[in-house]
Image (cartoon, rainbow over all chains, first blue to last red; front, side, top):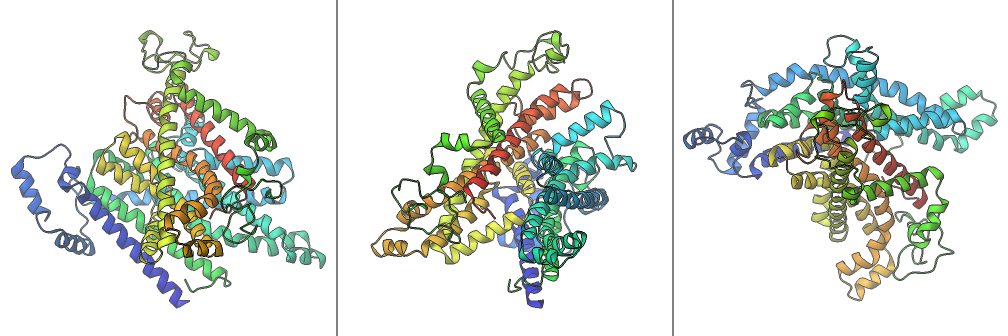
Length: 306
Length: 316
């Protein structure tokens, strides 16, 4: 167990390192990183000054060593447009993103698991088909179209809900619903297929044969076993939530790090992008690491030999 | 289950279904179904919903290919007197089926031309990803060792970083040209093909006839071509069908954010993004291209799910 965790942790650290290397190389791939940072061009003497300032006149290995040293000391650079540390910018905005994703995550589990159960238990009825069709829609319709449809309906047509910003609790409803749609659909589909697998197992027949109540059979015998595969995809869902938040925050003008990141792409603010990648990637890798461990804890049958 | 080897005429080569490979052997997706019964038999045995989807996709493809003949108006013809005119069936005065946009251009015609761009990019992207993935998978499986470890490491890397980030950074560095966009979305799902191909290579390599072929001096290239590619043809088709809508969505999302296809070229996502500013009083600017996107992605997704069940492949 300890060895397994150690191995997985090593891999997580390695992946973060790979991300750092990729970001470093990406900026130098096109030649002079200053071209990427200042696409409008610079006067020659200013360019020379900046080359020395950023240490770009040194050989690549030395640059890389300096880059790692800066990162390890927490120097992630300043935004080119706002002239302040990128860490501060992300620190200000990350709360809004975490709140939105957190709510979306909870909502998608709270709806996804029961809907998936209904889909499996009532699979031959209209109800079962209907709920799974809804789940399929959530799966196949892109975030920005769900977002715009909700804005049109509840914002412009019915005037029930606000559509931009995060000032009040009401502001959370539409973005959370949009962001949760995809994860909800995915969880519902997985719960359904996993529960169907379990329902056809021999021990289900045994449980019924020994006269257990249907409620006990479903919740104690079927659900417990069927949720194990669902837990593994929760890690993937977090990845999806991060992908989604990048778009949804822009649509709803949500002041989170997704919007900050897209803004940085549009403005080509490279230090902001660089830290964004490190930040997002670390979150995802950390979550995957935790999911791996939780998975082993809840299902001891899994071999822990990596 | 859907494995129809008995009635099938044996084809050349050692594809599944010719009796060389036992049915249901682990690691070998039984994939002969598509090739061995005619397409029209398959089509007739498909459920009604799938048949509707297929016809719809065919119509979309034809509309995209023959856009200049199908579009009722010139997509760039502006008419300032007919700005933001609602669809004709909702009381629009100028008789445009899906209304007009903020410059008085016909929305339907623009959608058809945008469909062409979006579908074209998605097709190219899917093909690039497939070629890249299959080549990497074959290299990884046949050469093994150091090559295998490195390629699998890249696969793991791609799986553990949100792909949207990679694309966004790529765009920030290389700029927003169509070529860059196609190449970036092309790398979206290559790892699915790579893992499939690699698994197949590892499975096939163990068979005696492959060993015999190697002993007779067959090159790696020949083994890949004769023994591996026929075995992965069907699952690859499923992957292509399932990856197509997701690449189309990726391109649409990027164009929607304004960092994908650049004006004056219009893609469906780009039209949604531009229409957003006028959504309050001209909702059809958003909803028309959005409906096209939803129809394509839903249709392809349904067809892909159906194909996966019919061909009975396990894609992990």
